Length: 153
View 1 (cartoon, helix red, strand yellow):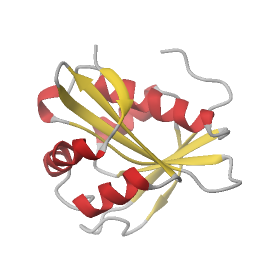
View 2 (cartoon, rainbow, N blue to C red; view 1 turned 45 degrees about the vertical axis):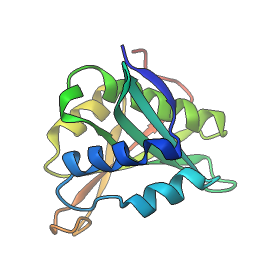
View 3 (cartoon, rainbow, N blue to C red; view 1 turned 90 degrees about the horizontal axis):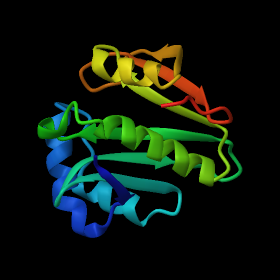
């Protein structure tokens, strides 16, 4: 079972490698990860499997807002189907709740059925689309879940 912890600057190389594996476009840069790690309005969480990082989640917060945004989540190819994605999603939700947020929102590429299944199984519901959201011209499906009544996992 992966261990969840806050990411550090020492994780930058691995975060970038996972990002490259997971996404063909719209990738976070090393500079973006560094900025997010230092930002008081972001939480960067990793799942560790043994001595290596298996995946990460980035959650964004706005002052005085009760909605958190799951900005990005990715798992290394070697760690797919290990439960790391579910654990990272749950940790992201806990981070949001710890900041006083009662809802989590996210966007997912319209063709990313695996991610959509993960979110729907966790209690997220689609509430709209954003056309031409991604660099490849694809739409994003927007999801939201109340954090007030957590789904049992």
